[in-house]
Image 1 (cartoon, rainbow, N blue to C red):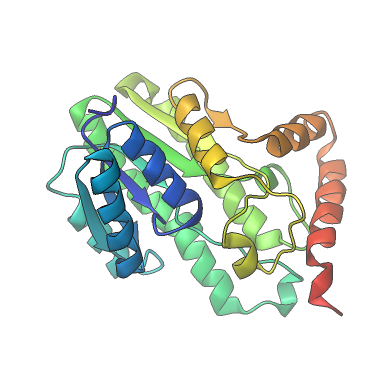
Image 2 (cartoon, rainbow, N blue to C red):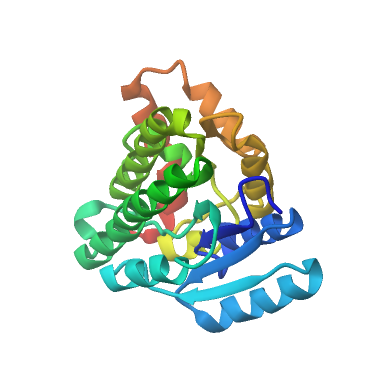
Length: 259
């Protein structure tokens, strides 16, 4: 049994960081409820985890950009003793804000912020009732300042970072550990969807392993060397300076957009 209880929920489990979290948790002996939109990919992952690690796996196909999808995810976990939730579902956008598609931006807001808020509330109440639990929320290195060229995505991650910090302080006396994970660029499908050109990126396996190791020991973790270097080198820089620096970094990753 994993230290928070028998069952862990991972959203965005079909690929990327979510998939790496699912594998890392199965390796630790946690039974898993895997949540994402693509059911066939979840079923394939679940079969692999059952065979390799002898854990129980359940699949919940849900689109977390919709109220119905969030309700389906909550309903699909209702019968199990869930002790840990990893809210890894999310996506990003990049480029000039005024040139973006507003429906895509609002969809990102619903997944990155709305779904995270709903799941934190639902499972936080369950954790409080059982007297312990763990919650992992995906922040980002861009969460600590505005970022020209990815203004809305950075804002969504600032929301997650602040939410995790506040809940961590609020829930600590209830036996609930909350962790904000703030990686730098990660080698996943995220970059393609966000239209980013990443020359250096961390492995999602490193993000998952270092995050699980930090849970209960820190409020925020910056997994991977690049996130640590960027985070600590910018820590003493005034906010206006961080905005300019991160804007330049983002500019180097979005230059291929043209214009």
